[in-house]
Image (cartoon, rainbow, N blue to C red; front, side, top):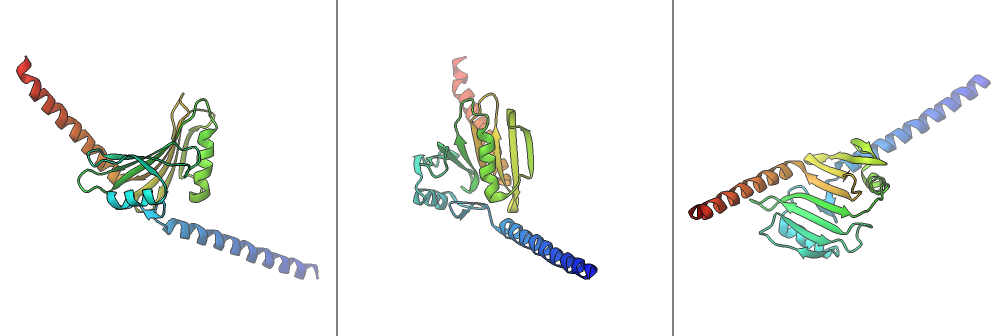
Length: 198
C-alpha cells in the first residue's frame, strides 16, 4: 500500500513539475519572440518620423526634435518613474532607430541602479550579464534581445545617475561611425577656412 501511495505521489509531483517547466518555457519563449519596442512600436528598423509620432502620442514632450542632430530629446512626463530625459538616436543616412536612453538622475543614491535593474527584470527576466557591485563603483547589466537588439542598464561612479538603454547594436555602431566621420569632416573644413590666417 505504501509503495502504491509513493508511486502515486511521485507521479503527481512529476506531472506538476513538468507542467511548471513547460509553462515557464512557454512564457519565456513568448517573451523572447516579442520584438524590442518603445510604447508599443517595434524598434528594429523603426524610422524617425514614425517613432516621433508614437512618442508624442504616448504623452512625451519633445524638447529638441531636429533632423540636423543625430538624437532627439524628450521629457518623459512621468511615463517612467524617476526618468527626467529620453534621448532617441538615429542613423544619419536613412534615419532608422539606433538607440534610446532614459536618464535617471541621482546624487549619492547607490540603490538606484538596483531599482532600475529590478524594474527591467520584471519585463525581460534576469540579465544576460551583470558586471560591477551595486553598492560601489561602475555597474552594467545587459539583456540580449532578438534581432541584434539589447537592453542595458548602466551606472558610472562616483555619480550615481543611472541610464536605461534600448539599442539596435548594428545601427548604433553605424551611427557612431557616421558621427566620427562628421566630426572629422567639420575639423577638416574648419582647418581649411583658417589656413589663410597663418
